[in-house]
Length: 361
Ligand SMILES: NC(=O)c1ccc[n+]([C@@H]2O[C@H](COP(=O)([O-])OP(=O)(O)OC[C@H]3O[C@@H](n4cnc5c(N)ncnc54)[C@H](O)[C@@H]3O)[C@@H](O)[C@H]2O)c1
Ligand SMILES: [Zn+2]
Image 1 (tube, rainbow, N blue to C red):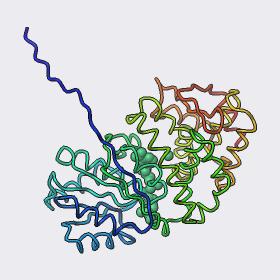
Image 2 (cartoon, protein in one colour; image 1 turned 135 degrees about the vertical axis):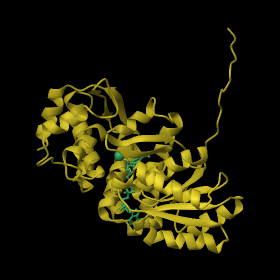
Image 3 (cartoon, rainbow, N blue to C red; image 1 turned 180 degrees about the horizontal axis):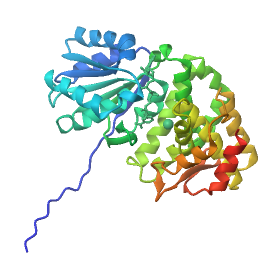
């Protein structure tokens, strides 16, 4: 027997900058001019296209950057393999080569889909994120998770593929709806609860200003939140350990979204999920009453509904068993032990979940 060993010990530097500012489209365009790029494909959805896409494309063209735009219909329902392959065909017919660049201009749907396309198109080409929702700014544009949904579940097929840069232009939030602001806020609050008590105190003071889109407060909150996400990803890029803590509020949150037939938004689901999981932590004597009440009041004060009303509790519980982050059918929870600290990989008894959910009616 002969043996040849193909050695592939990898040391890759995938570091990148996250740039946060006001009205930075012009700077982005100028920055692109200095990189000797091939073609540039801007991928966006139809809403963002109308608001910022055309303007951005014109700007790139005015700098003689060889660019074109692809827009697909907005919404999670289009984060699919079908949309992916349609876009790939356009990229190929436009002659986007390996030296080209994909720019994701939009919310998390655009970012996840474009990142996935960039990771497989010609075995991987460069891409940049320009997130335009609060959620995408503080969460989905950072960390390199890309995916599309299938009928069997959300984010079923995807890759870890980091962008070359993330540009956050706070001014794009001017057109974002209140509901979408709340979606992002839920993840911001989550970041504070899991790892940063000081940030939590900041949010207690300034949450209403975030929702009112006060520029200074928004910049601070976004910067703080991105820094938390960045540190977690630096520590555990592919979610083998620390990154799991970002799932706080999501085991019950996803289950609620599903039980409501997605009438409840992701942010509302996560808010309810954080309340439920904090109450579970209290029942399991992991967190004290004072800290629990502070968490719940911040969530309530932010404008989230913290009652389950008509949603079927047994259905929520059953849905948790199909959570992606489970071990042999048993969902594993991330529970707070105090503000700024959580414990991961915890099993919770059925009766505790049902009792807590029952109390939230
Ligand atoms: N990759 C990750 O780590 C990660 C993390 C969290 C969520 N996600 C994914 O992110 C997606 C959700 O992202 P989202 O909440 O940004 O949703 P989204 O991309 O659907 O955007 C929400 C809506 O806002 C519109 N919009 C975007 N920017 C706007 C602006 N500036 N002004 C007005 N309207 C604007 C969009 O057209 C859309 O209708 C989900 O698919 C989720 O799975 C990914
Ligand atoms: Zn989330």
